[in-house]
Length: 71
Image (cartoon, rainbow, N blue to C red; front, side, top):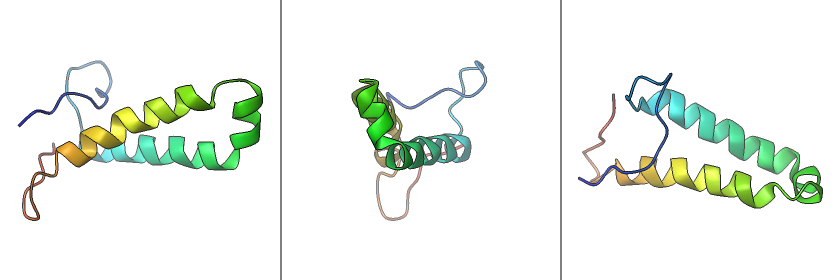
């Protein structure tokens, strides 16, 4: 399974699913709440790329209805 992407937790080369899901959710919430300010600072696209990097990994780790690679 190609699990490239996502974010490491605490610099220890481990990708924990729950903390990453929380972090990506919080980033998405920030993008929703502060969209105008992020656009004004020309940072919205960077934030959306960061969100996409995490969500793509989470989606790739769910390889079938009964399989989720997580730690």
